[in-house]
Image 1 (spheres, helix red, strand yellow):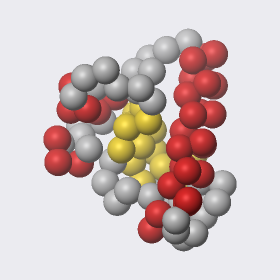
Image 2: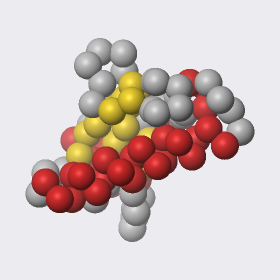
Image 3: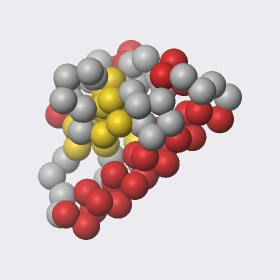
Image 4: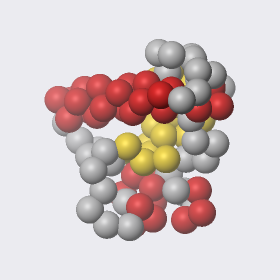
Length: 89
């Protein structure tokens, strides 16, 4: 499952446990178990952004994909659903 994460201050679906920065999520429809697993992976990815930087600037300023990607990011269903331009990935 691929998930496009976009920084937001309006009703975030997930917040970074390190800095509190909020993210809106765009993903293809999947079952509940896959969504739970994806949320774990997103949380892990957000924490990993802080290996070098402690504050919210550790996260990419543009949208970014989380999870395995077997092709160009621009062709991801999550990216397409999230209207992510190629330069944002």
